[in-house]
Image (cartoon, rainbow, N blue to C red):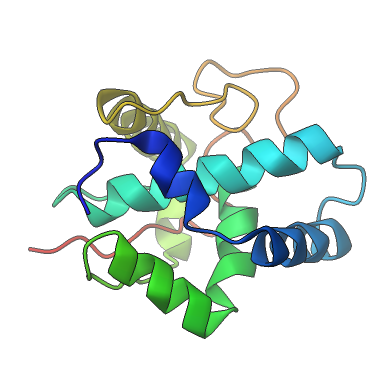
Length: 154
């Protein structure tokens, strides 16, 4: 699947799976998340993964997007099916704690990923992609807390 219709990407995650991912994120790390934030979070994660599947460039999620990715990747069969639907390349979750220690590098990686989302036709939600040091972001506004990224094809 090439990214031509962004709404189709969102539809690849069933309502039941979406609800379970949201529940996991709430229980594990973000209990005060609203229903609107939850819906947008799943969509931002799906957009991130669609971009990661279609580029040779390293893609790095924001902290909030990574929370959803962590919950999704634990559902191994639907996650693998989602990756297949995006073009067949399994999108590995690659933590890199060394990158997480460099805030400037993390911000640059996250900013570039948000640009890739925009270029692919997605709308990066500023609450989930705080590329301009948004005051309302959670935790450290650098990137994923563990320096997570995808595994680009070389």
